[in-house]
Picture 1: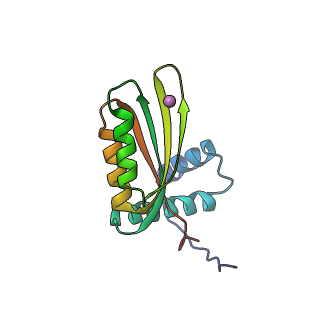
Picture 2: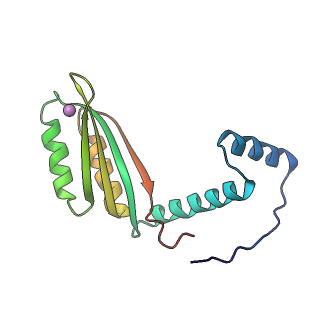
Picture 3: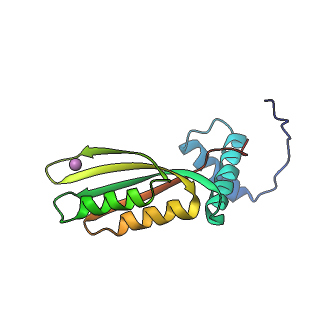
Length: 140
Ligand code: NI
């Protein structure tokens, strides 16, 4: 599908533009336009997540010590409770104690966030991040 592209002018303080140019150079953007498009998409994705009801996708990344009592059972239990939102999970044994688990999730933002919050709160989970994105449907 070919989208119509519109050019528009943006007014901005010199200092702010300079900061922006430094940032996009660090992030390897080829043009200001590409950087601005990404900023707008990110804002829209965040809005989808804030709205709560929209279908979103993401990953929950967990690091935990599997020796902590009941920990693996509890993580398993929460993932089963959210079976509708869990697409797959992958497990890496980092060393004698620590595991890394990546859970790919999809569903209403509220449900996905709820699962991430439950997993994070399990005793023995050292670190848990929710990387929130979108299917991109509706985003050019
Ligand atoms: Ni492990």
